[in-house]
Amino acid sequence: MTSSDGPAPAPDAPGERAPVPAGAPPGIANPLRQLTLAELRRRTSEKWRAHPPDVLPLFVAEMDVPLPDAVARAVTEALALGDTGYTRGSAYAEAYAAFARRRWGWDGVAAERTTVVPDVMTGVLTVLAAISAPRDTVVVNSPVYTPFHDYVRHTGRTVVEAPLGEDHRLDLDVLADCYRRVATRGGTTVHLLCNPHNPTGTVHTAAELSAVAELAARWGVRVVVDEIHAPVVDPGTVFTPYLSLPGAETGWAVLSASKAWNLAGLRAGLAVAGPGAAAELPRIPEWIAAATSHIGVIAHRAAFTAGEPWLDALLAGLAENRRLLAALLAEHLPEVRYRPAPGTYLAWLDCRAAGLGDDPAAAFLERGRVALNSGPAFGTGGAGHVRLNLATSPEVLTEAVRRMVRARP
Ligand SMILES: Cc1ncc(COP(=O)(O)O)c(C=O)c1O
Image (tube, rainbow, N blue to C red; front, side, top):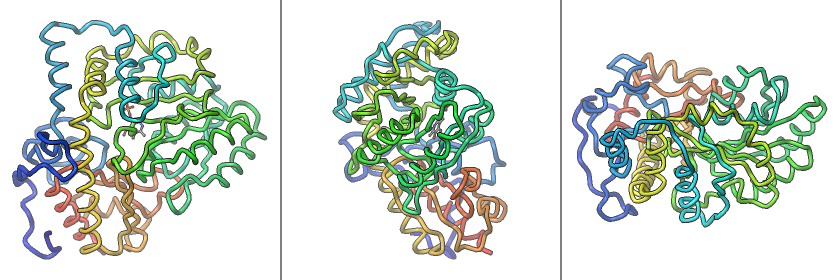
């Protein structure tokens, strides 16, 4: 471990090629240790182009991993064949249905209750448009993924917060009270749920989700769940797909392979209607499926079909990184509170005791030259916090903490 005042690792030093982490499937090396910073800096995506090159980026949810072989093979074959036309068929849905069966023992994804969508947020907004009107209300559990606030507000809907508890879990009393209050507004209320939860990494339990379904039924609230992070759950924790629960039949889920296999640039998502919402599928306009990239569908299908060994190696690497981050912070920045959580590759850091004000990300960027996400943008509960993306190599993670130390007042 590097001490805060010890020799600084050169920011662009090649990352060590490292052994397979404990718990990883045999034969697949930790995907988080495959690329050097010099290689990563040649990338042209948001993570690598939003800031000048002296900034170490650990903000947007892109991972520092190579393209999984299964995806690379499928996309390369499609390109060689010139299979670059319009997308058609239910291959994506069937691949996801089989993944859900193997991974979570859930046999409930029927291809005829799904539609491909260009990406998850477009899918979420499309479902919102299908089941509610612009002046309606959307409940979110702050602090939450910033587009749940911004994009939804942009549609004309009112965002109402039912904040998570101090323990980063759904607060069912707060939620019940929120549902009760918004019921008086009239119109449709949609609860846009995030499972696992970005930014805290909380994985909602079956009991919590059942309670949400029950409350939603009582107050006439529609539930739309974003399960984009569903595959990114530590093997010690059970992930429950919302639509697998009795009482959740009128819900909708939107998901993709984009977070777990780093495919944001190969856009394609899937919207799944619960059995009680299937009649709403025809309200999704034809151009939504038509706007979905066929190469994206091929990539996401390959990930769900043949990407599990790679995913398991990733999860083992993420578990290692969570432990490393906790140890680094405890040693070098004990005033920053981190509660490792089993979902996502995001770490939600409470910096309120660090004397860096409401938006510590600004100080970390300015003085430490490390880019993290700004907490206040996640809504209530975000002040004094930052979100750190730990899907990187242990060396980069270590350097990031070293830079955060430099930003101390
Ligand atoms: C919860 C959540 N939903 C949606 C997205 C974005 O997905 P897409 O790029 O498919 O719209 C992200 C990206 O990080 C996310 O964390």
